[in-house]
Image (cartoon, each protein chain N blue to C red):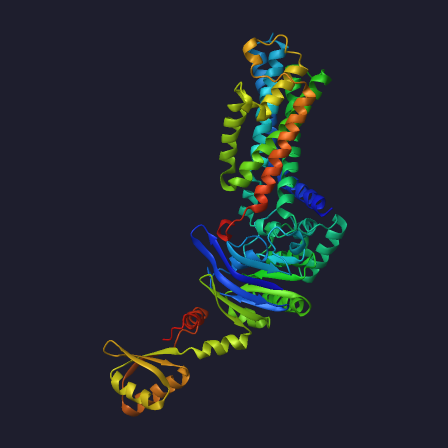
Length: 309
Length: 256
């Protein structure tokens, strides 16, 4: 469905996407990466807004840039807020459907159906400028699905939504993914996990991992995490850790610091607590490795580069 | 069929954007300006020659009002979409870029020509020339042709330098239309102003009475050839602008 072969996108001297090769079949896929990782650029390439500087992008069997046949089968919901203010949600969605080549009457029918699907209801007849950001987000999504595309591409679709709206839209998008293809970009792992989607992880314009959520977690777990310990006798603590077989690596930091590389950070923390209690070592701090998404990315990058902690 | 539907959709949508109370007020103030100027001139010079009034109305409406109207409506064709965040919604549609440019062109011509027609009616009344349907028809034709030619001309800066389109278009207007257009050389054949001037001179039967030095900045060919040349120039400019826009790419950071 989506194929990128050694795709690089440069903006002058700035790299948007760097030598990405990935094949995404039909179904749901998540594109995960922190802000500035290159997700929007990659989606721009997939949706025909951008042309690769190097490499080849194929979507639904053909390059999308300037290709009306491919574009007619793609629905896209960008991350940026809609600055259109005077038009009502219905007018806006009808306009987009007409731009997809449908006649006015059919466009209105499709727009009404899509607005109903996203739960906009009566708000569809209000100017976009008077709607909340979450409601505008629904209108954007309606615009992306109203022409009935085969591939729906969403860029940070749940940003700015309250929990109820988020739940509704996740359900809607998940329902969509049941019958057609979906590519969702997000910087939040749980959003992608909620969609039961396959994952591609992008960082610094490079694809650092791809697979399903379980594969990514296994991959992350395969990279040793770092546990930092601050205590008054790091040498005795190191001795205890060496004997346990939990530590893959050990190094001292300053006079009271110890850094442990391990695949089992939770067990290390428990052992440190027990050793501190039994041996009377005053331990002032135990910090587990960075468990945020940023930390996961860092570890994936380390794995990608063949560097361990 | 899909291309025509898309163009019609953009033209309709852009016209709705242009027809706002603020823009209409601004447009009507602009439309009243030539009439006010004509009244002021007639007050100073009550016995002013009819031909001078016609020349004044020509300079004020098919030239100035049309030019200003198009600067407002045609120049932001792409910049507006980037600023409103609607650009990615439009360009992912089949032939969305082409529809955007041609649709905006149609809307800009319709809106500007509408304002210019109001300005013409007011100015002719102010000049005491309201009872000349032939004169009104001539100016109406010049207004429409001016809008078609200038909108196509401003389409180029709109797609090449969208965020500086207004400044670039003023530059193009000054350098191309009012500098190159008045050069007695081959280059003035590529300007809208030469075609409009030549038609005005021909339709007003001024050719015989025109001083020799003025003949240098007028084309001798008949009006139908001037119209054909102007339409060909506009079509060429619009096709070139469309081809450029079909290849334009904006980094995500440019959409804000």
